Image (cartoon, rainbow, N blue to C red; front, side, top):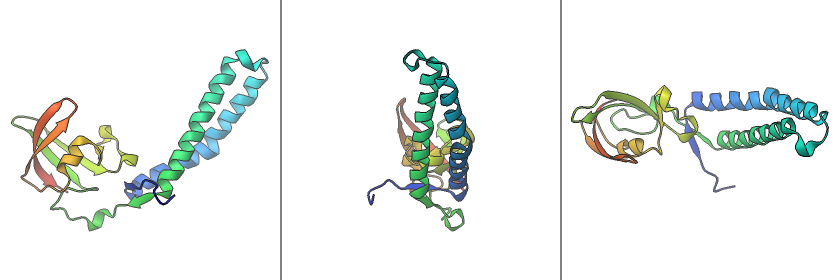
Amino acid sequence: MANEKQFPMTAAGKQKLEDELDFLKTIKRKEVVERIKIARDFGDLSENAEYDSAKEDQAFVEGRISTLESMIRNAVIINENELNKDIVRLGTTVTFIEVPDGDQESYTIVGSAEADPLEGRISNDSPIAKSMIGRTIGEHVKVLTPGGEMEIKILSIM
C-alpha cells in the first residue's frame, strides 16, 4: 500500500469525487441490484440480455467505487492560496498562445483525477502541461503532441 499512486487535486476536486462516490454507493448501487433482481425473474439466466446488462453495470459501478475510494484515500490537496504565481505548477491557471499565430487559450493544471479539458482543466500528465510546468511568463515552450511539435508562449499565470 505504501506504493499507491498519489492523486494531486484541489479541495473542490476531492469534494466532487466524494459526491460521486456517495451517489454510486447510495443510489446507483441499489438501482443496479434492483435491475438484477427483476432480470432474474425473467427466467433462464444463460440467455437473459437484461440480466447480462445489469451484471455489466454492476461490475462498472463496483469498479468505479473502488477507483474513487483509492483516489480519495490517496488525495494530495493542492493549497491554491500558497502557490507561487510566477511559475507554472499544479493548481495554476496558465494563459498562452500558440506561436506564431494561434488563438489565446487558458487552462488550469490539475491532477488527472479532476482533469476536464472541456471545462478548462488539463492533467499535469498531459503533454502541454508537462511542457509548461516549471516555466515562467514570457517563455517560449516546445510541446511534443501526438500530432507533432508546437511552440507556445506563456502570457500569464494565475
